[in-house]
Length: 310
Length: 109
Image 1 (cartoon, rainbow over the protein chains, first blue to last red):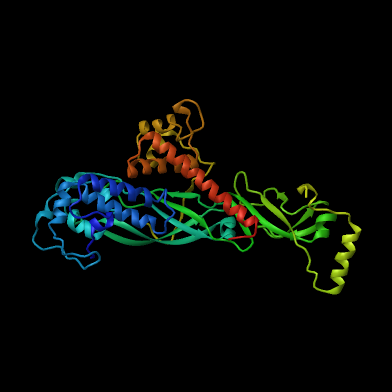
Image 2: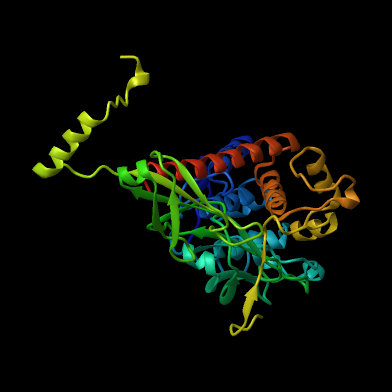
């Protein structure tokens, strides 16, 4: 396993005071907390910070860690010294919490888990969470997804191991971006016969070539010709359920929104599709086209800048 | 554990969900008192007047879990939790709005 440099993780010197460690942890925790942070890898970083803090904030654990010496470098292959030492005593922390930590951590402090008094401690497993990225069409129709998850487990020897498992999950029709699905009992297994934790899946909708979503509503940019906007027209527009005919009222302008009720993601109530009109000016790339534009210029007494007062 | 040949069906945490206080407490692994405090501070907004009538939607379940995580991980008190949660949600709503408007303008994704 890899040696973890907890001081480096928190960015403090080895002789940092308790207060310095606390301040460094708080600052980093605010920066990388998965609920707050937009940093990539925030969740992994937060776990590392939490683990480092768990050890360095506690004088006994810190002493045991320091006893390994300072010749180690982060990422270096680490083998715990055989035959016991300072770290072999029983450390106190919530076993469920420890399951979140690294192999390195559990090799140092995990030996006491599930042995002696801790054995009778019945505890519910940790909740787990995972992100599931699906396409908009899949969100519309619902889909069954196979997920591979790494679940921390406490073995018979009291050490934390990671087990990989595969779940097949039915994602119902109509899930929106950011929505969560709770799977009771599919989190980390319980300790001492306690119930398993729950699994939370957070839905992430992949960008779509045509549509954008806002909750269960679906947005579509619809290019139209100037004469369609001026005179009105019936045009075919895509929806998640297939093409429909939309009536564009005469005198429409760019930026106007037309609503197709109930044509968004299903649900109660279902979302709508909003069609955003976008007038596209035909290119004047032939003499005939330019002549036509000139004819329009003289036919319309039109000043689009009348309101600018210049 | 779970055999792979079976499709798991979860519960979508949306507006249709309605948990009472003890169900929410079980889901969040928190006590009724802790959650009641979150209600009185306005962090959680259940339907219904008296605690026995409280019903928490899926959105409230997500809020409750996030509030408890923030309290625990960042050692926030109740008022700071309420503030952080409001700001995070406003930020999320604004990001979503920006995404929609950028799309409308033909930029970005």
